[in-house]
Length: 255
Length: 266
Ligand SMILES: Nc1ncnc2c1ncn2[C@@H]1O[C@H](COP(=O)(O)OP(=O)(O)OP(=O)(O)O)[C@@H](O)[C@H]1O
Ligand SMILES: [Mg+2]
Image (tube, rainbow over all chains, first blue to last red; front, side, top):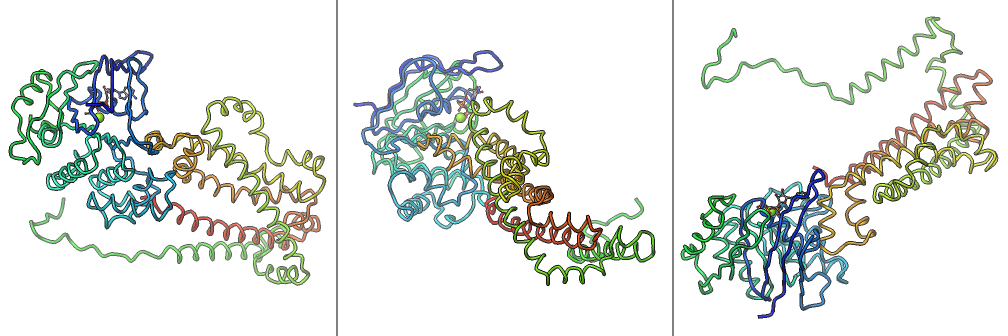
């Protein structure tokens, strides 16, 4: 299968107080086009950093990173940040339309697309609000809508559902699965929740170590459509527990 | 503790005084000032030339109005004010934003800024006259210098203080050119700080108007100088109050505009 993301020997270090702090070293990862890959790992292992490299916000200090979307859209890759990062001076709908600017669409067309994306995350009625008038979870959903609105070929998601209640989360998980099945996007999904990972993804990649790298790669065999009941995957849980060597995943959910 | 509150009992009711509305307090303060001001010369504590009582002002004001001096002075000063403010604030925002955006630009101008910054607007009067003559352009120049730095530093600080996380949002969505960053993130994010600088400039510019007109360009400042050389202090006070009223009007208008522009803030 052709891969849309190819990472070979990725290393990344920060300069901190004159010292080099290595966050990632020798990280290898290929992601097949159209696949849904979950990334799990302890807090601080470098999951967000990995996504930042993939979208070009951080530069690798070693190795090679190739992201090769097929289409020629202006914005083939989009990132849902771990924190919502809405622009406070824009109304919700204009926050969601942000990534569409420069796409040649008229303002009315952009807003129409933004409203459609807001409807997906269940916030159609909030379009005209200011970000400060939303709850934390609502902001996170607007941020998700902002990434969906550009209809990216590759969607990078950094714990997008962690701030949500169980019902909303399950609704969005199903919505995301539906979008993925329908559009054939490639999704890279960071989460602390192993059940979420095995419910959504084809593959679960475990990052561990300091500096971090991919230590385990687990194929999720369960056929789709999946039901939540059989989401618990003993082999994966055992493997994660083994690799994290007692380090708990931050949220501890499902471990 | 002398009183024990029983469980479930309402707290002892305290007699509540109704708060006096702020507008009433402001009016009372102003009235008190006028009364005091009227009383001091009337009681003979100082002469009426030293401190013209407010009751003498309406007649003087009507004279000035009838002769056309008042209207002429106001129109002339307003045009200096607006032009000077536009030039000074426009350049201040533009260069301040540039200095906030670019380390290189900031470094290149650091010492130019240190040399020019401490020179007060008034000190530029001789050069203004040499360069522009006793003309509107000279007045505009002095007012512009008077407001430039306030706006420059406000804009620079506001742009420098923009949350890097928001700039990353623009980067992540492919808006990476300086122009896109500026328009989509830096200017809106810095607008609260820039507007604070502009509001200060609005007041500062009136001071500069007087300085700019003292050396002979027609306007409020010149009229005040003429009157004071004749010891017509009532006339001076009329123009002082005129300027205060104009400033109050502009400031109130600006605050309304500012509130609207920043309605997105919590
Ligand atoms: N700008 C930076 N400068 C220095 N160190 C940084 C910087 N950003 C992140 N780090 C460090 O890099 C490491 C990885 O951070 P990262 O945000 O990728 O972790 P994460 O796996 O996403 O964690 P979490 O699950 O808590 O979100 C952490 O140890 C963090 O302290
Ligand atoms: Mg993270």
